[in-house]
Length: 363
Length: 267
Image (cartoon, rainbow over all chains, first blue to last red):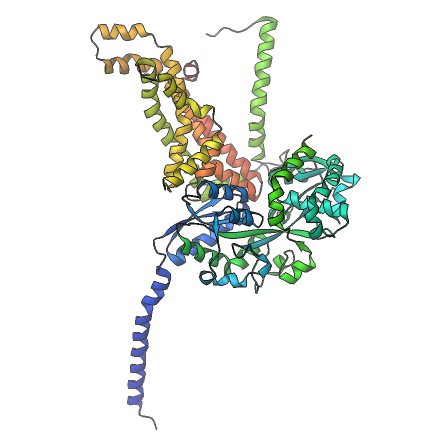
């Protein structure tokens, strides 16, 4: 039979050792997260629902976890690239968000650094096709881009070709050529003319212009601000608009408006939002930690369900409502035929494309 | 009592004035009307009547912060413009300052340069100087664009000052500072008041400079409004805009009580 006194002594000794070990270990807990204490950095995010989620959820938790301060500004891709260009010699920002189209531009101009894999463990979970330009940019949210319409005024849009139909004469609100969706539409036009799949036709964009000119009678106006375009379509001043991002469209769908995002038979485009690390960043390690946080399962799930855009990392369990509408996981992206254009080849032509758009639709 | 216009010519002038008034006020009336709509989106014509959007907006802490940032920035830049603009206008008009025309042109240059480009240039300059505090940067940017209003209106007032009164005061033994405070200032108060009103409203509504220099902690109301519009365009946007209009109206009423609107606008 065991001596209870000896058992008590053993237990007491064990508890003391455990407490001592915990005492030794506790500074390590604080030290692990203490390296960033008191630091601050600037982060450039997107506007809209996603920017709001960053401000209300992502940033406060990061600040609290690392006892640091994040200064957030909200802008669009070209605005964020513009800021990096003006501050190239002395960047204020450590992390900048931009569309996939912007990553080769920023890399080419020496504005961003390669993402350090050793400091961003969650980078390994990002779908390989959504890590850009040798690891200079990584997607953190993927929207679908396609036309949208008022279901009370128009029959469903089954194909991009429907945009050219007689029923939309003077009833189509076209996205501004300043945004990448306009180039995606040009790729569709090139595909229609050449008969080639979109991903092949993207290398012959010039062939799409005669088709774009045929679209002109349907174009009522060209919009810059999605909110004002939606109001006009909801009020019956136009029937269809776009193409545009699901993260912009779906909040209005959820608000009970008669707006529907189409699922063209040809497929849709991927609107990819990316994270980049600014070259010469004042706080590169803190920036890497922030990028890792945004790519974490916690943020990826929360942001996907709040903004109705697909996560970019594997292994996320989305709620049924979100899972039904977003292109996730990768197999569903293939089912939905989501296209990502070759921006590295297209970007050098961008200026000329913009000029041609202005000529075709401005005259 | 002001004379009334009569005859056919008078009728045409009153009609033209009314048309301009309608043209200017109609969009504001539409915005205010939309702010009371019960619809989910800011669609026209508005539907029903509710003050719920105002309740939502005023209860929104982010809106209140942005509003206070704009008010504080507008007051600070107006005071700074007053402190710099009044002495600058006086010196340029009364003293023999070398290169006075050049100095005046530089002070008034924000009138002609595109404000968006001024903001971008400031962003670049502040990055070079490692100036990272958004509040300070915004203050500097706003003073840059509000200062010309004070200089311009005070200059116009100074040109209308009756110099013989100043000379009489000097002749009667008043020191220059007393002449300035007792004789000159009362005559240029309308210019100062108008300049301060313009400065306050320009700063309060300022967007292009704030666009480049603001951050989430120091976000003026126009930037907050624009960010809100990118999320969802519902009548709360119209409610925020209506509160901005109300602020402008209160500023004008304040001017009327202090100086008198007619007197201020007679510069």
